[in-house]
Amino acid sequence: MKRIAILGSTGSIGCSTLRVVESYPDRFAVATLAAGSNLELACEQAIRWRPQVVSMAAERDADALALRLKVAGLAEIEVVWGPKGNVRVATHPEADFVVSAIVGVAGLEATYEAVRAGKSVGLANKEAMVAAGELITAEARKQGKPLLPIDSEHNAVHQCLRGGRMDEVERIWLTASGGPFLNTPQSDFASITVEQALNHPTWKMGRRITIDSATLMNKGFEVIEACRLFNLPPSKVEVVVHPQSTIHSMVEFVDGSILAQFSVTDMRLPILYALTYPERVPSELRFPVGDLRHLDFCPPDMAKFPCLRLAYEAAEQGGAKTIALNAADEVAVAAFLDGKIGFNAIPAIIEDVISATEAGKLESIQQVLELDAEARRSAQHRVQQRSVASSPKRELV
Image (tube, rainbow, N blue to C red):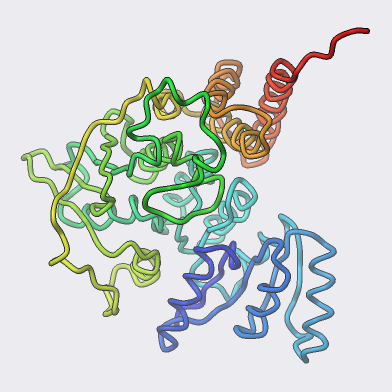
């Protein structure tokens, strides 16, 4: 019986993980949960799964949850909160496997501490690897524990790599849907609305990741994550636009052979793969091969989508550059969603922040968090400058 800790239990990945646990009651049990700010769902999950510990983002929600659980006769469930609560969930002695699915850097410290505690970790959080992947992977190697990707693209690469040795790999190919503006002229980008950017052609995702898909920054984050997960330079990680999103990723070997992985677009499959690795267990998740008609591929346009170029450049330099990339993107995307800046301003703000950031060498998670906060302040300042510049001027009477 594998006992699971879930960081981000009320998000889409967390809920999908619980569905996998429910489908295989003889294999998995829930040890601990970190539930963020969704009090109602956190309470439902705690009552259903009876974890040892539940963490909430805010103290007031933790107090409210503890009271509800006491009324329900479950006062024995420990309720904690904040970053320290997440660490408690991730490092609990009852947990064998940690699913890292908290969006943003909020789950960074807990993910790192889970690795330090010798836990096997399933990664569904790109930001942790973008901001602190150098530290996390070094610690995983020290502990001799695997980092198992749950993101569909990296999970696909991991599966394909079972067909050969790492020294036989020529390059890996990450596929991108191209987002909603694949065929939109660049001249129209300045007038793109929030509603248009949130209308992804293939996937239903959270608001930030949907905007990141529209700018191709999401694919840029995946390039950085792939470099760190598989210990490859950026020159060996290629992005190819594949609108059908049928093939999740490919691995090309030195002899010219290419292995591709495709499956149903259901996150339960990569979650199940990570939870059961190195086994494969039966599931009902079947791809209808008979429905396969054609596959289109084309190179990404980095002039039209500069966020992808910025990610490659940050990956080459490493250190604080990738921290600045992620932090500035999160701030700029939030500003776009709030109507403070235009779509075109997102990459411009990110590039400004990266240019003002020294690469440096990362020594600790605390340093990562400090650099992240500094980059966010820098990005907020640039958002404010653009908001003021674009606001209508009042005439003096």
